[in-house]
Image (cartoon, rainbow, N blue to C red; front, side):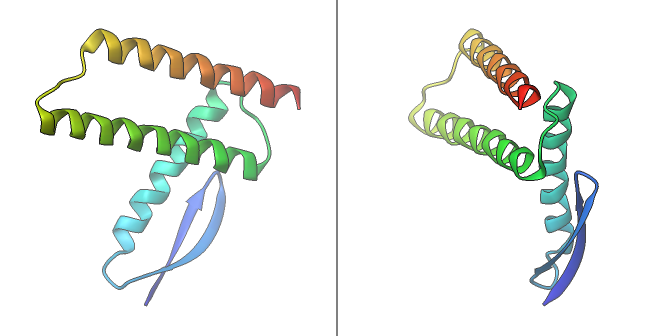
Length: 105
């Protein structure tokens, strides 16, 4: 079992993984860190736990969208670009609302 030091939001964590999975684990940590950076960029300065929860929710939303797109592709249905753009605008607006809420607390 390998142990990797990952860095998220400036904090280091020692995490164990299967041998050979070190790069994959580092990549996943990097994805979480990117989400935290984007949350902080829109003013979401908050506690570590809240930032991790919001990053997790962003990742879960992206995963949901990918699963929906995959299901649509398998059935021959495609999501239209205007619908996708509108959804992204709604997500961005919601992220800004969350960041504003976090700034108040």
